[in-house]
Length: 296
Image 1 (cartoon, helix red, strand yellow):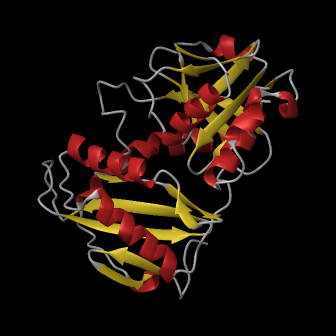
Image 2 (tube, helix red, strand yellow):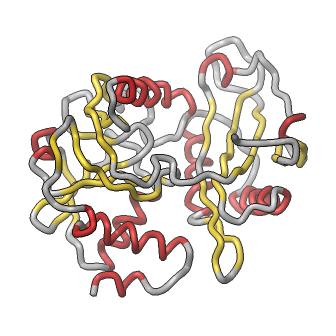
Image 3 (spheres, one colour):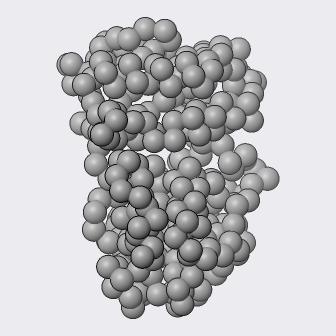
């Protein structure tokens, strides 16, 4: 699904066939989930293949490394150049890119001395699909921000996401929604949340969520389109009483929500602010017509 005999990835200074790449089984990342990663999308545009907000993604990758004392001796510019070469090697224009920084062998609970850098890419549609999602509020909460550095994109953090998504799917839902440790709305396992009420948008404030790069794009688009966005601490009941809702993330892009815990939203998706933003976002990443036209 992610690679075949023709796929090429970057690993520690070399471009090599994906099916020939190897790693050390004694690495800290393998044993303790001590590594960082990113997800970046490439889109075909009239000006050629474009990595959307690549600078922001690699700045976050480096910041994640710094927060977790993981050495990374590549600049944003070097990582960007490598990523475009990976796309070229794989003849990809519409793709998902996965950079991963994983740690050298170390069985002690100390910061790593050395790391490896891997960058791969594959063709991947919208992660959560195209249909409206049926969400279930998870029994698992997001980790408390005093227990981890919540704003870093760390491999081990996603065990929490896997547990929540698996629980939701096993219960017949499409995806989970996690609360924070105090019972307020947080985010999806791999996406941020917005909901609409009376012509305004609401989204959980930062502090207990990963402040996503797609989330930032949604906020920028909303401002350009004259849509008011409220940031705060909201309870599940606030969401149940909303008119509509959507998830956003690099892998998911923007996807509408049909219901939460079987509570169905009253506004048709085609008439929501989320749908307007979904259209604007699609045009933005593909460098199509002005997103400002969407607000008219």
